[in-house]
Length: 184
Image 1 (cartoon, one colour):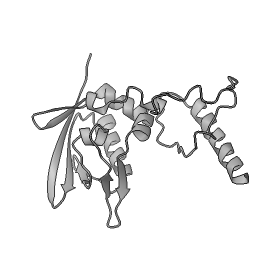
Image 2 (tube, rainbow, N blue to C red; image 1 turned 45 degrees about the horizontal axis):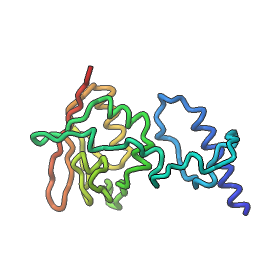
Image 3 (cartoon, helix red, strand yellow; image 1 turned 30 degrees about the horizontal axis):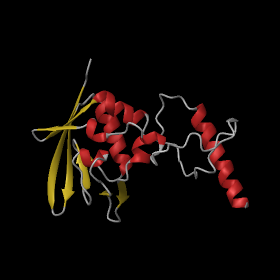
């Protein structure tokens, strides 16, 4: 019982941090390990804890999440609107909750993509189960954090909109190309 109370207290702290968070600040530093039954907002006095549970069986964060609608693949290049990328970066919760794809560290260094299924963002971006990202625009990718740092450097600092991701697929190196575009 004490362990459940500790988890509930940790969850309430996380919820308070989330509620106090600047909506423009990314959530990358947040850890969400709360069980839905424990993670409740005690200021909610509606009485029915199931009121906000979606009836579709899909988490509320997944409503409207459709990666195939934000990635276009034309002539060997994956295109994404920069606003859509910004939305995912600023609010990654749908990506984390709704997509099953994972980045698994490898003992020899680097990481492998697993569970990249059709309809998920990594799949729509051309990655497949077992792919090992090697570098993006010359930035080596030894960890998922390296990927985040490379994207930050390339997109936010260098204002790059064209990307080439080199991956190891099976025994072959292949290059996936991406272009971000801006709509007015």
